[in-house]
Image (tube, rainbow, N blue to C red; front, side, top):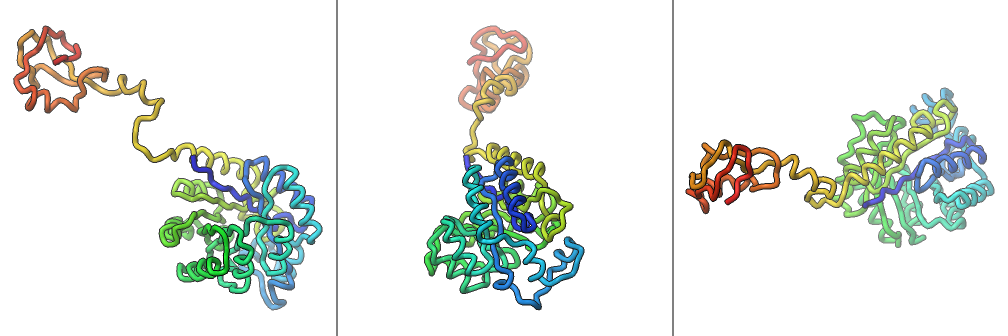
Length: 337
């Protein structure tokens, strides 16, 4: 059975609190996620003082401020990230954090990260991609806002500079994403174009779309979650609450079981039902020994433990054409030849 890698995206939903970040890690573990992911950045390194918040950020926060001001309220210190990574190890869930600048890449590398998650906004950041690739570690890259050509350039750059295994996540960068803008089929385009594992980073409300993505072949699912959707912050309103995260993960695990191995054959639990549900060739009326079997005196009825109706043509018109009843048959009795 294929197991989907489920990344519970805490992101910045800790609101700058280590205690809340640890609680998010606890809830991700309890929900059954494989990885809990945060975001590591230096506001001064990733945005200028002139950069404004996105429309969805202004709407979700309800205030107007610069990106730098907003991000400054959502950061954890290096020391807090060290403690957070230690906490994740203690409770038994993989720690991951997306770096948004090169100093953050170097810091996370010092924590021993074996996996990199590249956000959609960095897919056109040449020096950033090179720095990630030079680590030689596995890469999962989101592709929101990207054309196929841009994804191709990024993948080529990562491969050229020594990146490990690359997986691609289809994504729509809007919080929340309207269903009409999801375009899940683009995930399959990524798979067919680059011949890599693909997944889906979801920003829709609810849990239906990531579950559908798994049914379509996603091997990685990333989904934002929060302790309380009513908290102040840019991403809370487009995040699952903990009970919803649990439901999503349980549903994905059920879909994994249901996908099977693709071989079309009766399941073991079906075998006992075949005799009950299928039909056999039986006597349509009483037949005397020596009568010629024909459509006038035979029919098909349950149970299915006699001659299969798929032998109907053979029985009537070809190899046994003109076959005579070998004995007397009562109405509904299984025909023998």
